[in-house]
Length: 304
Image (tube, rainbow, N blue to C red; front, side, top):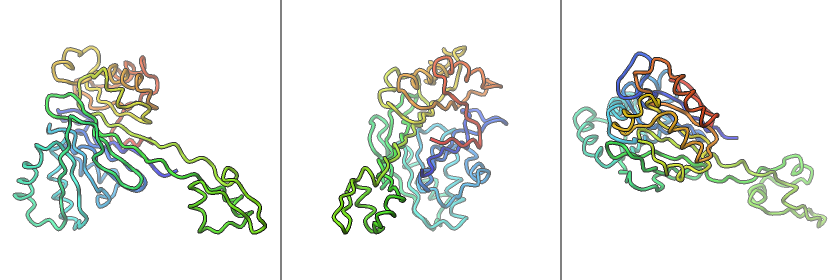
């Protein structure tokens, strides 16, 4: 099975601490790298993770609060210093376009690569990126500014060839794609070998949903049905529910409610308030509702 992993670069909230960096993650899918949010220190964390800068092809920004985008211009500058030539695409709310253009014009006049900006309508769930093996959809969220999450979905793959059977019938490699697509095989003697004997079922498509800053949305689970792995902000515990409601954030228990109602495979918590010295209180609160919950920490890597 091809790799589908999430690399945690930062999982803190707005106030920087010595323990956590602001929001940033890398989604690794079949050899491609995509950056989700770009808080301060992202490029330092990329170096620590030993992920290759040059392989990041796109950045997906959820909203224009500093802890999710202050690291972007610094990273773009560093890409230029490293001699990047491949185009980088930035997906973000439309308000970032003018800000980013001005920053690039002032700080990064001589970039040898193109920075393409694509505005994302944060009010709609729609495909914003697609390639041969993957789609990325926006997920409308409710925060104090325009905000959306992103849902990475693998496309269905072909069946697996049973190589032992194919070799037994001396089937040419040139016919493998036809068989993966459902074709039977007829031997030179006229024997029909059904496709079911030649193949094993394809791997089930995997999916990852990144729900950054948002207040609790009772209907959000409807957009996330059956997701393999869900990251949902858990800035506060129920002890600070009034703060969560005031600042349009969620508690760990509310994140778990979304995970349970959506029937996801696993829940990742993050975006912790600096008021919590130990996030286990958030983990315990969430696990009371949804057992398969895990805390995120910098340099953690999760298989989707």
